[in-house]
Each structure stands twice: as structure tokens, then as C-alpha cells.
Image (tube, rainbow, N blue to C red):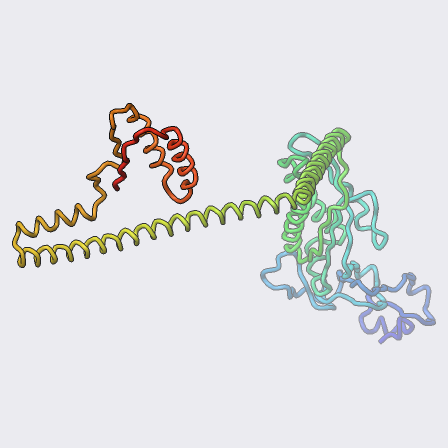
Length: 415
């Protein structure tokens, strides 16, 4: 309506007023009356890839909040109204009047924030962050190098800025307090050795705590990492001695295991060397066992034979006795009791070996040769038989020669 302030009369006719003007002049050549307007050259607003610009408007239409009743951290408005615009500016160049609008650049890529002496090269948001100083329950003071990764979604950037004001406030005021207080409070009740041994657990607990805190500001937590821990010299000495002792214990265990293996090897070697003798011993044991089993079996067989033989003889005796009883009964029936008894007595005497006449009978003729005759008869009795007939004849001849010419009584041998 005023041709970029070149038609200044039209500007006045349509209600133009003295003061800071909302519209800005874009790139080009303009014929402006220096007695009517003054121009200040400022660079254009450049939004790079991986970031957005949240606009805070100080001029424009009346503020109409669109954030809802739940959001209590300022007003979010549509572009053109006064307040924080609900839609951020994305990648591009924008001609903004810095006297009317303020742009807060919010990185939408993952931010690495270092609690250490090193500063991130991509940004300077962690410039004021220092190592976390914590004290253990024993009083050991040590420092922790920590890295936290956060992410601000581009759609949530206006809400984040409305709550914290700037990204630097988010890091220095919100995140630093949440991280530092968590480590100081938790490690103060924990022994230093336990912190070293459970470092992963402490890191996981820190991640959960920081994630919970940043979710209240609609900021995502991508990771929490304990980079390094600087221990005091006294604690390092204690830990070094303890580790050396543990390594010596492990060495002794390995040596003991090696000795046990060597003993087992020697035992196996000795067993192998005595294998032949062991085999012979086993064979001898088997032979003796078999012999013992054979003797047991033989004894059992003999016992069975005796038992069976006794049973057979008993049956035989029983049969003979029954037969004799029947015979005796028949004799009694035929001859009578007295005649039967007499017959059986005579039969028993004839079948028995009772002697009624002496084997050697020596008589004397009165000439004193009785003793010599008895000696000769006895010798003849003992030398009788097929094997001693020759010797008996010789002795008889010798006796006959001595008694030649003498009266020798006859010798009777009755059997």
C-alpha cells in the first residue's frame, strides 16, 4: 500500500504512524527518503537442517492461547499473534524484524552433553558443565565424567521453550540439577567399592531418574553414560593391593589345579604300567573263584549222591526186610514157630563167619617140640597165600631139616 515505504504519502494517508515498523524490506534496491525513514541492516534469520526456530512475537494480533488448560507454562498462539508461536520455523531463511520478533534456535538432533572438561564441538550448551563431584559413605571423594544424550522433538520445541525459556536454561538449570543431585544423593550412601563393582547398575538407575525428570519438560532422554571415574590416590592404592591379592589367589588356584592334574596323570600312568599284572591278578581271582565254585558244586554233588544212595539203600533194606518177614511168616505157617526158629539159627550160623575150630592147633608128643611146632605153624599161617607160597615152602623145608629124625606131631589147619 506504500510500495515498501517509497510512497510515503500513501503511508500517511492510510494511517501510518511514527515509530518502529513491522514490515521489513527484502533484498533489492529501494528509493527511500532519508528524512522520512531510517533503515537498519540486519542478517536474515537462517534455520539450518537439524534445528527449528521458535518465534516469540512482541507485536501482532491479540494473544489467543491454543495450548489447552493442561499447559500452564505460558501461551502458545497462532502465527501473527503476540506470544510464542505454536508452529516453529523449519529449515530456511526468514526476514524477521529483530525488534519485533525473537527467534530461539532449538536443535532437533540428538544432543551430547558432557559433564567433563571437554566441550562438545557441535554446540556450546555444555560449556558450563563440570565433572560431578561425589563422596562415598566412607568419605572418599571422587569425580565422575558423565555424558547425557537428549532429544527435543520439533513439534514439542515451542512447548519446551515456553517452559524453560531457552535451551541453555534447559541444560544449566534443569538438567544439571537433576543429574548432579542424583549422583550426589545416591553415592553418598554407597561404599566406593560397591560403586565400582555396580557401575552398570548405577548408570541404569541414573538413566531412569534423568528420563523421568526430562519427561516433565517433554524432552526425550536417549542415554546416560559414565565415561570415567577419577578416584583418590588412597583408594587407588587399596584397590591395587586388593586386585594383586585376588590375582595371586587365582594363580594359586591354577597351580593347585595343575598339581591335581599331574597327580591324576601319574596315577593313570602307574595304572597303565601295572595293567599286565592287574590283568593276571584278575585272571587268578577268576580261576580261584571258578575252582571254589567247582568244589562247591562237587560237594553238592557228593551230598546229593550220598542222599540218593542212602535213600536207595533204605528202600533196599526195607524191601529185603519185608521179603524176609513174608518168608518167615510162610515158614511159620508151614513148619511152626519152633521149627522155623531152629532152621533160621542153623542158616545164620552157616552163613556167618563164626569159627568153631582154631586156625592153628598145636599138640605135643611129649618130646619137647611143642613150642617149635607152634612157631612153625604160625609162620605157615601168615605166609599162606599165592604171593608168599614160595617163602612158606622154604621155611617149611628149613623146619623139616631141623626136625629130621624127630617125631613131629601132625598139624591140623581147619578153617
